[in-house]
Length: 449
Ligand SMILES: Cc1ncc(COP(=O)(O)O)c(C=O)c1O
Image 1 (cartoon, rainbow, N blue to C red):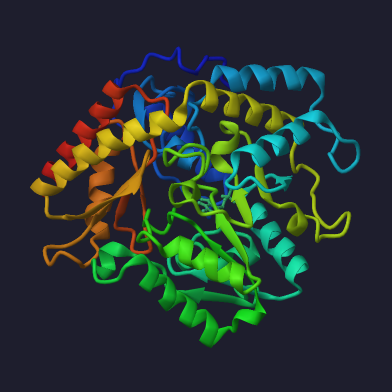
Image 2: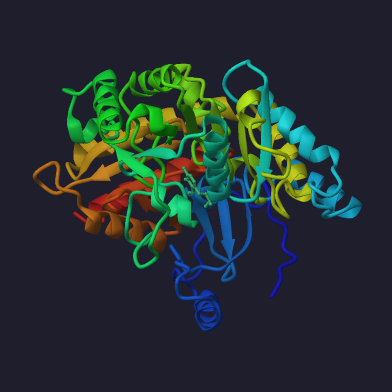
């Protein structure tokens, strides 16, 4: 079943419900999905999409939903963005694949040059392109091990780094990501994260970093550590923003101990937080940075970018993969980056953040179930708690989300306890549509009181 309906920004930018959600056609399609698609693949909202663009998803029943998810932080530039679609169409007409390791092409090198320019720091940088975020994280670890000759990998509480064997080991949450899938890769050690809402103002960022460093020193030994891998703002783990000073202190410790500091910016990268990368906010310069998701407007592309001398520690042929840096995905990335620059999507993300923080803080005053409003730019979340003000309330998060879905607003949940509602609108969403989505969210809190 294919679709010939055009999406992109021309799609009418309004919420419009003509059936219940999911509608009868989506329900029928979902029954087919249940017959042929593996049960282990989850579904947040069982509506089948036939077109999308701007801040809208149109389903097969003719409903238009407000998109506050961007396909999990992917379509920041908007779905079917013209600059992306045009470059993809042009590339598909020219050639679709050679395998960069067999015969190279410019698109791959162009993306690497952009990554060298855009990622934090003005040192010499090189990149390897891959197809998924997990693959990028795996490769960052390979590179760090080759460079340092050490084995240990340090990750943090609530971390999410992917679903491959090594990245499952690096991911904190058991269900659904790890349950039944062990044994996991070894030499992965977990340190405490800075989590201001759960710690209160008592723990400042530098103290939280010292606590993590103490665990690493005592339980692993700095001399054994190849790399520290950290999301500068936690993604699946609950959009936790570490206290100011946490990341700079960790980066400094890594530098003085010969440890490769890896920022996993797969969810936070490419304008999402109002900067090109979340590390930019505190002037942190990682040795390696992993990117994916927002890089290519929806096509599968990922990268490890880092200091040239670290990247070049790997022997020729040690990095790569059949599809890594596929020419169509590279063309999409170049179109997406052009759009991010041309439309100043960093400023757009900051405007979205200001609007959302204002509205959500107002909502928190009326609903004590909202224990915390946090995030940065267009990466915003609320953590829901019971009447005691701290016990996680995943039931309320599910109820609020279900209400939003029924009213045609696509929201996501996250967090180790499943009690965080997260919002990742496309950075090109119209303000009126975003406000309407937030009105529905306010109704959802009132209706689930
Ligand atoms: C921070 C982070 N790292 C890694 C990944 C894994 O990326 P992928 O799903 O493309 O493998 C994700 C995906 O959500 C992520 O948010």
